[in-house]
Amino acid sequence: MSERKGPHPAKPVIGISAFPRIVETSIGRTLLHTASRFYVESVVRAGGVPVVLPVIDPTDVDSMIGAIDGLVLTGGGDVQPSRYGANPIPGGSLVQHVPALTGQVHNWLDRGIEPVHKVKVEPESRLAEALGETELEVNSLHHQAVRDAAPGTRPVAWAEDGTVEAIELEATSRVVAVQWHPELLEDWPEQQGLFRQLVDESRRG
Image 1: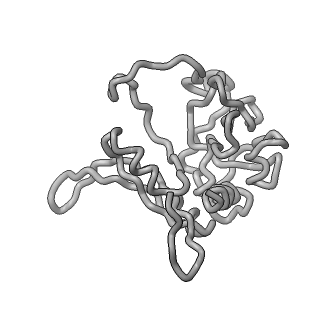
Image 2 (image 1 turned 45 degrees about the horizontal axis):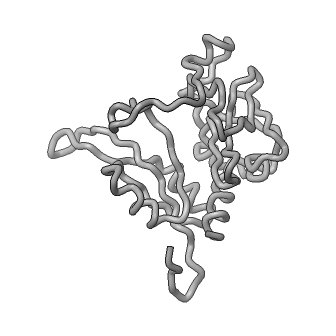
């Protein structure tokens, strides 16, 4: 990526994956590519420039990724590999409904902006570096989770019931994935540390 020119150091551009949704508008039902303001504001606070990335033809994704310095994948519904002409690949497995396995509720949709359970973080992980903590409270809006981590990934955080709450890639220190929603905990400095780490890494190129 070419260096941006200007009187001030360029801020890294952080892509935020959009969530497609159909809404009623003055011209009828319309497909919008949306992103929560919480993601946008978390990137801004961390010193980055947020850009919402729409869902596009897969053949154009490389060009899109080449235009940004960092990426926030916001999650969403599961997509069958057959929908994009691929077959399921081996590696990793899923807990389809956490309460059925552990007896603990993790889908607290009405408490998204408050912590509902504790998480322990591996001390030597990139996640611990970002958070500045190895034990903290998090919100929880999911009912599925990683059962067995796929080859090349490793769990680095766990809820009190043993549910995997974060993974990292073994081949690179630049990918961190968490199960909770740090963007909603905007007044918690340790949670916003994930966005600071992303922006700092993106600034270094």
